[in-house]
Amino acid sequence: MSSPELLESVKLSDGRSLSFARFGDPSGKPVFYFHGFPGSRLEPQSNHDAFLKAGIQLLALDRPGIGHSTRKNKRKLLDWPDDVVEIAKILKLEKFSILGVSGGGPYALACARAIPGYLNKVTVACGLGPIDAPNATSGMMLSNRVLFRYGKFFPPVLHLSTFLMVRQLSSKPAKGLKKFVEGLPEPDRLVLSKTDAQDFVAASAVEGVRQGSGPLLEEIGIYSRSWGFKLEDLNVPVSLFQGEVDIDVPASMARHQASLIPDCEINLYPDDGHFSLLVNHIDEIIASL
Image (cartoon, rainbow, N blue to C red; front, top):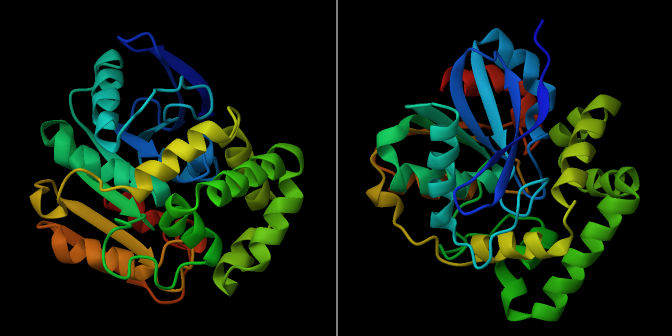
């Protein structure tokens, strides 16, 4: 049985380091994994065996300023595909697929727009949609609405909220996670009631705030601004997976994206939330890749 490699790193042409982890089959079909917010390359660790069984080599990347990856000043969403192409060349990958989860969704779709020639398929699970879309945050939990929709209008509130989140995750992650879970829908609470599930989520989040609040504020800014491209212009097959009781990223976001992406399949699950989706339907998600 192959074990995951939790920390590898490559040096990019501009001198930055980009850290990543390998899960699944080391010689399998290559798939890049883009983590959520706050998250890191450790996020898919609990699904290592599922990717191994499916013959997929999952390469989970830390974005700039996350985990051990070097920060990049004034970065934009459409800067990310260049980093992905560079690491693909370093790893000698000519073609690959992408799985973007939650806050990794916009980055996956940015790659679909910017580097379609490298891609076999793009799958997005519970992916954050454009915040500037009509009623984009309807049904979203208040804390996320504050960060993504209203934070830019009240910078002191945004900075304080992010600072407190980082402090909680850095010092008492278990306590912070417990409080967070209490406000989730039942399917998510059931999944996260298991100690190992909480440990995996906490480990990923703690690694995600390793470099402090600055990189998280950059992420929020990227989510809050226009993405810089139209979903109608994507020409790569995209599969969307979404739980309909998700309050982290509401199902309306998936429906909106599916209505605009030309070659798009949407899979809705009425009894799943944000976290249960990746547990209860991981095999379907993997099959889409």
